[in-house]
Structure formats: structure tokens, C-alpha cells
Length: 233
Ligand code: C5P
Image (cartoon, rainbow, N blue to C red; front, side, top):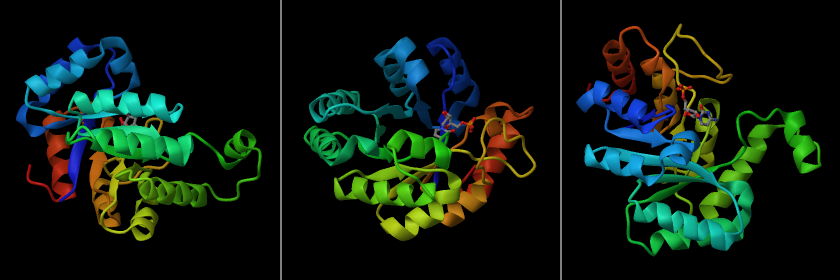
């Protein structure tokens, strides 16, 4: 059964926890990203755990293997359930991170970010110094490399989920942002999908922010997302 993760795209722990308390029992898994973690640090993770919530720490780590391994271990020591790193850090970095996390015997699972969805083929070609015909091919290639290195899954746009599920098989964790209700505002997301489509394509976790938080009736939007996911509301 696919699960919902709500991103805490708030500037402070106070604002983030106000949202968590507003949503109450209905949401139990939250994503803490770079802004909130940089401002508040581990305290926000502890505050979420204190409320019985699960945490996805979206730090998109990228550095030399030793540094990433140590940072991944520090995140695992916080007992976060999901942690991101960049697949472009390469084999040695991903293997070191996977080993470091496994050595903690915590529940932390690692997710690779392959190609940021903000890249166009031209922008990626300029960065990598070769022409890129299809970003999707690079996404699949990097996702396979990540799996070979012991990384548990991948964060991907909803439009790539079906292709990644086919390429990686049933055991890979697939986490998908860019979810919108039919007819809802896309905001700054270019490649959106509805919750039912993402689940049908094979996503395990849907990261759903503004489709719920910006809705006039939050509980109704949340119930609709959960219903479309086939999850109990
Ligand atoms: O509000 P919305 O549902 O668009 O929020 C999506 C969340 O997922 C945000 O925290 C955003 O930073 C994150 N994200 C994304 N697109 C990606 C990767 C992460 O929207 N490609």
C-alpha cells in the first residue's frame, strides 16, 4: 500500500509544528528539507518523533565518500526513516553511505536523487559536457547504479515511476513528489500526476504538499488524496 509523506516546507520549527498539529492523526510521515533543517537542525526531527511522527530527511547529500558516510551515519543516529543523497556522487560515495547506514542497525533507508527535475536536457548537457538526448535515460542509468551500490530506492518525478519500476523491479522504493489533484493548481511543478496515477505506476510513497496544505479545505483535500491512493482515510 502506498503511503503519504507531507513536506514541511516551512521556514521555522514553530510554523512546521503548527501544520503538523493542525493535520493531527491523519498524517504520520513528514519530509524535512534543507531550509528547515538548516534553520532548526536535529531539534525539528526530535520534535516530530516526540509527536510520534516518522521523518524523511531530504538533505540530498553529495561530497567525498567519507564525508557522506559520516553524515549518513549521523542522520541514521537521529533515527530518520528515509534519507536522500545524490547518485551523481558515484559508486564509492553511495557504497560508503549504504555501509555506514547498515552498520547502525537503525531503520534508515537511503534514497538516490538522480537528475534534478529542474534540469532541461540542454542544462544537463552543459553541466556534464556532453549532449543529452533524453534525461529519462540518464535517470534510469543512475537509478540502476544506485541500486547496485546498496541504495534502497529513488526519488523521481511521477512521469518516471512506471519506467523505473520496470527497470528496478519490485524491491526498489520509489518516492514521488509533484502530485496534484485533477484540476488543481500545478504551482511551480512542471511534471505533475494525480495520486491514483502515481500509485498505479508503482510509487511506494507520494510526497504531497500544496495539493493539501494550500487547499481551502485541508481535511477534505487530504481525504481525497488518501482515497485516490487507496489508503484508509
Ligand atoms: O507542494 P508540493 O507538493 O509541490 O511539494 C513537493 C515537495 O517535494 C517539496 O518539498 C519539494 O521541494 C519536493 N520535491 C519536488 N520535486 C522534486 C524533488 C523534490 O517537488 N523533483
